[in-house]
Image (cartoon, rainbow, N blue to C red):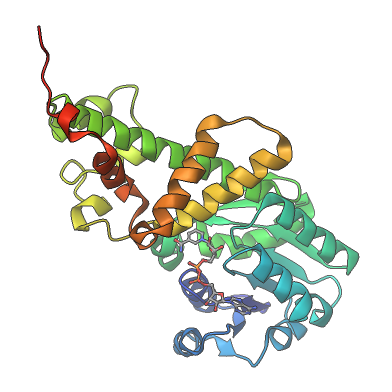
Length: 308
Ligand code: NAD
């Protein structure tokens, strides 16, 4: 049991269950969100709902933010008065997925105001948030990581200190660039296999135990059948929505641009998922990209057989 008070700002799909887990672990949680339905659920979960972000922060030892994007974090820190309202030396845990540059700017704002902070983006989705089994990638000074660790252990089952300010977001963006590129590669391989007369099960049975093995294939398999729990078996109900993949790859593209790294596949994956998410794909699991690849393939040629 702990006597620390936590301000939790952003009680949406992820923040809601994360705040509920902190209540269950014995923390006093003061929560705020702009959406009334989120507040109603939080109240039912034992969160003390307050009138504003600043009110939540004023008496808190720790401030956690779980907001949609970088501009929301900046607005909460400055316009909504989180930084100004918090007592000097308050620990800020910023868990939204935002650009590495924005995370570093947030650290600077905190440092200048006499606060402490870690960037701590998460992976594992709503299921992981509810179960308290998120993977949490942390950037910040060693002392600040140590101060945040007990709370992060409540929220996740794998907590990795990745380095200094921004390193958590850097790890997140690199991981999700691997995921976006590998899902496209796996989907292209299935569509090619179909055109070559292979069954999906046959390709899966080989690649899942050969050098093509990866999470996109063996856990989130984009065709129905081989992995019964994958979103392809429920008409691509997310899972991990195309809109979130497009957002994360957009952050990767931004990081590629700001570092000057040439990553042709990462950049192309960002374009592919942006286009996908601008249509109905935004609300579907990101593995539904396979349907786009199939639709774009030439049916006159995919029917052809060898001529020899
Ligand atoms: P969400 O939209 O469900 O929740 C965000 C909440 O923030 C909303 O309820 C919104 O009303 C609130 N909000 C926005 N501005 C606010 C402000 N100024 N003050 C108070 N509340 C404010 O989003 P989510 O799915 O919970 O995702 C949150 C973050 O976690 C995002 O950065 C997302 O990329 C990341 N993430 C999401 C998932 C996932 O599977 N949903 C997985 C990993 C990481």
